[in-house]
Amino acid sequence: MSAIELDTPAVQAARQPMVTASTLPPAWYTDQDIYDEIVEDVFRHSWIPLAHVSQLAKPSTYVALDLIGEPLVVTRDRGGDIHVLSNVCRHRWATIAEGSGEAKALQCPYHLWTYGLDGRLAGAPLMTEVEFDKSTCSLPEYRHEIWNGFIFMTFDETIEPLSPQLVELESIVKNWRLSELVVSSAVSETANWSWNVMVDNWAENYHVKSVHPESLEMMTPASLTAPIENHGEPWCYARLGHTSDYQETIEAAISTLDEEQRTYSAVGTIFPFFCFFTFPDMAAWLQVKPTKNVGELNLELMLFVEPEVMSDPDIDAIVAEQMDFARGIFVEDAEMCRRAFAGLHSADAASSRLSHLELSVWQAQNWLLDMIESRRHQD
Ligand code: FES
Ligand SMILES: [Fe+2]
Image 1 (cartoon, rainbow, N blue to C red):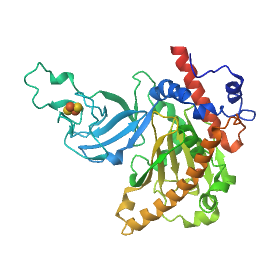
Image 2 (cartoon, rainbow, N blue to C red):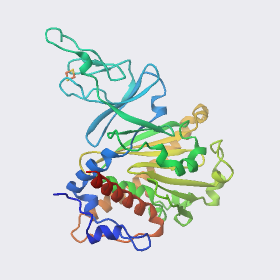
Image 3 (cartoon, rainbow, N blue to C red):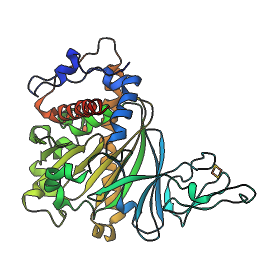
Image 4 (cartoon, helix red, strand yellow):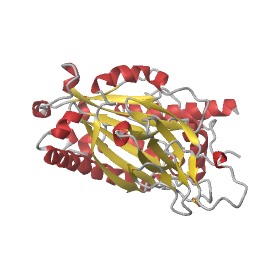
C-alpha cells in the first residue's frame, strides 16, 4: 500500500487555488514512508543539480557528492567533456572519489582499480588469473544537462529535457550570465530538517521582516516582494525590490544587466530543490543534498561573482564580507527551519493557510502533486 494518498481532503485542500489553498499536511514534511515515495517517484524522475561548471573549470577535474543515498561523481575529462558517473567501484562497491580536485583518473582506494574520467575501467591489478573483461566494468554514466552553467543529472532516461521546461525562467535570468559566473566562496552545513522545510523557507520572502530584520529586511524587505506566476513551468521566482539605502550601496552590478535589472534582487527554486538567489552584483546557490533520511540534509551554500571580480586586489576582503553576510542569514534561517521541523512533529500540527507572499510554497506543493499523479498514470 502506498504511503501517499492523493484523494484525501487534506491533499485536495492543497490543490485549491492560491486564495483558498492549504499547505500539504505535516506528514508530507516528516513521515519517512512518504519521503521514501517522494524519492522514488519524484526525485528519481526529476532534474537534480550537482555542480556549477566553474567548479570543473579545467580538464581532469572532479566533484564527488552523495544525493538520496547515491554516491555520484561529476568529472570533466581530458578532452573537456562532462560526465556524471556512479561513484561506486564495480569491484566490491567501495566509493571511489571524495571531495573535489584534479585527477587524471579515478582510482578506488580498496584494490586500486582505476577508471578514466569517462568512467571506463582502465586498470585492475592482479586480475590476470581469472577470466575478466575490463570493458564490462565501466562506471554507470547518467544523463546530464547543463542549464546556465549548472550541471543537472537525472536517473530517468525518458523524462523531458530540462531547458525546454524553463523557457520563461531563462528569459528572466539570462542577463545574469550565470554560466559565466564563478564560485567565489562556499560553505558546507548539515541540517536536521526535511528538504521541503528547507526549500519552502528559501523561496518565500514573507519571513524576512521577522527573521532577518538587520540584514535582508534592510535590503529586500518583505513588503517589496513580488512572486510571479510560473505558467505551469517547474519553478518559482519572486522579484525582491530594494530599499533606497541598499540600492545606493550597489557599486558594480553584473555588467550585462539592464538599468531596471540593477534595481531588484530575486529568489527562486527550480523544483524540486535547486535554490538560487540573484543580487545585482552576485548570485547564490543553496545546494540541497537530500539523504535517505527525511530529517537529514547536507547543504552547500555557494556565492558567485563575475570572473573579473576575482582579480580585484581586495578580493579576499570582498569574499569574506559576502560570506559573512550569507552565513549570518543562513544561521537565522536554520533556527526557523529547526523550529518548524520540531513543530511539524506535534500530534496537533495540521495543514495551514498561506500568505500571498508564499505563492512559491503553493507552486512547489502543486508541482510535487502533479509529479506524483503523472507517475501514477504512467505505472
Ligand atoms: S572495491 Fe574498488 S578496487 Fe576493490
Ligand atoms: Fe530566510
